[in-house]
Image (cartoon, rainbow, N blue to C red; front, side):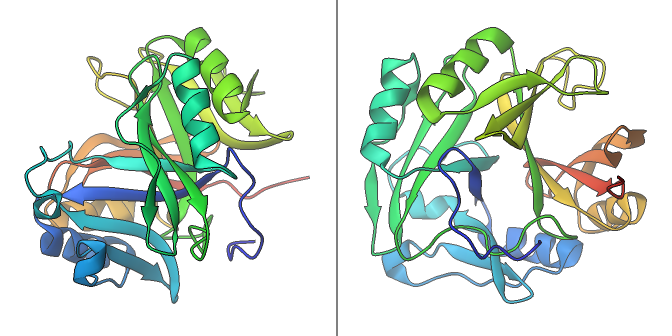
Length: 265
């Protein structure tokens, strides 16, 4: 069901956001491409913009200026995994070879968060929800549908996410070289080695998490991306799960688009 009504199980991707050099331009881009609505938030949130689709939260966009004297992070989409205890997650991350960039910090009464990297260098976040559980709509056009790890060391990554976040890895049927990441037996993401034939990033990319947005028409949405000032990294192509493309927004943040094949059986 596209609307999320139950709490996210720990280890499940629950939120995504991006820090943009030009927040207003990013809000305009995603409004044109996906129909999101959003505006800069209040000063106490650093102006963090909560973007909505059909009135439900789907993603966050923050201005790099809000980082103050801190170096602005790269313009990339960050995947956040739900956690029942951010401090325990932090310990699990560091104990298993990950690198924490922030401690677990309070975000008003909304929750607690941290940002870290796995042992292969892929950056991700952890979200311990309080008043804000995460994305309120998923798996429908304009919303998040998949999170994929492209890694330089699949075995090391698999061991890390199992130990640190409770995600189990298994080969995905019908997709050679591709692996599912599951929580309690339910696939919540994918993983593949950098350099695989269907790997979505550039050939010299570092380990990274890639977010996928569902669309009704991949080719039509790619046209919207270019019209809004974005670029195409990989032209639309057909694959086992549907028709997909990889693009960048007008400020260089990469993401994938997919018109999923209807479920059968």
